[in-house]
Image (cartoon, rainbow, N blue to C red):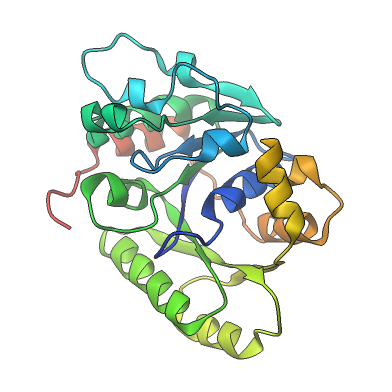
Length: 255
């Protein structure tokens, strides 16, 4: 059983990386979870997961002439396997986004769930590839109409490549959002997974270099992320099938 999810949004600042790690920890209670920071241009998952000092990252795996193995860039953290991405512009310039296919294909052999922390925008090959490769997308939005519009663009693009919608995650919620949630129910292809309350503890978790569910496991936000994870039914599938699909996936030449 293995399924790949792209955690995506239509713009930055929605809390996508926080959500990726929180969902990963929650799903890891029942599944073998691998989290990959696929935001090769603006990576920051390594800071959220206490991996700021590691030497080998996804950037190294995306350079053709290196002999780095996938295992060298995979770290056991908080009950998950985590593949962080580097933050240097030089690493980004050298990286070939298309090689992400082979990296994920290899990781699929040992995972039930793969979470791809995806770039916020859809303006380049490296940005859209995680959405194209995933089985389903989890769309993280703030509770505003413009944010819903951005999220719907992500869903439209995903659908054009056969990627389904696992659901919508409302993040940084400060007030009643019933009207906006009704709009989401009408237009998105998946359910509202949860409403995550805005909380200072999210910032303190990031500053501590820990996922929210490790830093403040009893907080209302952590409980909401667990509810979201429980709403995701991981589909049955073979790791070999997913690996073959990833390796043969067509990388978009135009956006």
